[in-house]
Amino acid sequence: MKRISRINSILAACAILALSGCASTANNPQDPFEGYNRAVFTFNDAVDRTVLKPTATAYKKTLPDFAQTGVNNFFGNLSDAWSAVNNLLQGKGQAGMGDVTRVALNSTFGIFGLLDIASEAGIPKHNEDFGQTLGVWGVSSGPYLMLPLLGPSTVRDTAALPADFAGDPWKYKEPTNWRNIGAAVRVVDKRATLLDASNLLEDAALDRYEFIRDGYMQRRQSQVYDGNVPEQAEPEEDKSSNSQVVPQPVSSEKQ
Image (cartoon, rainbow, N blue to C red; front, side):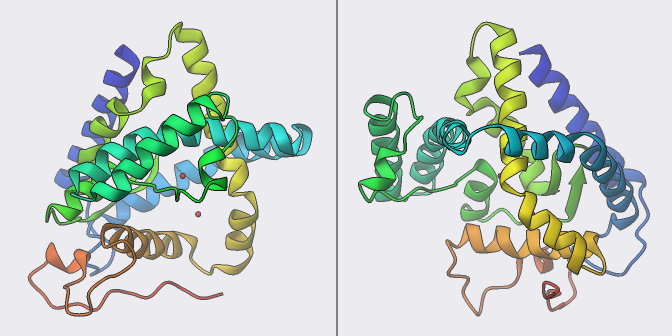
């Protein structure tokens, strides 16, 4: 609990710093804190290159595929529980009950989630968080924020993080040392699944910061609308600005 409180305090301090003192280096209404965001991106990138990516590479090379799948399924099953809550909060009853069914099947017949029986049975998986729920409720994304260690976010998604942390069942795992080990394995496993994509990004993107920012903003908008963004809907990044701006497209050749 104290660890989560410290994380929330750090996130709040970073948000305040960004909102109060960071000058923009570009006239981009969706990224008015670009100077701060690029500095954090550089820090995150250094941590990834020196620690996280090498660890994830070793994890992927040494751990058998079936074990990696089991780890991914186990934590995916935990995330389904929070997805169910958010789907229900968004008024998507069928999807929410589908998530509940997934958790029930995978936690029992799937041996505590190590096997994804629900997907085999044709029950689709969803990835919903409280930031998306706020978006469905009409809360604008606000400016883009790059968070230390946590990566791309927005003001809305950052404000939703305490709820997302609280909604993670693994947060309540006892004893604490098992919880910490599991959290570390979870991060490494997630990074391992992104190795191929990150290698492609490093080779292809001229400005990786812009590529990740624009891709994140468009992806989050798509998630809020479940992939059906209305053509007449004003882009989320424009809602925080009084000007009419067309969102930047993701450069063509990153949970």
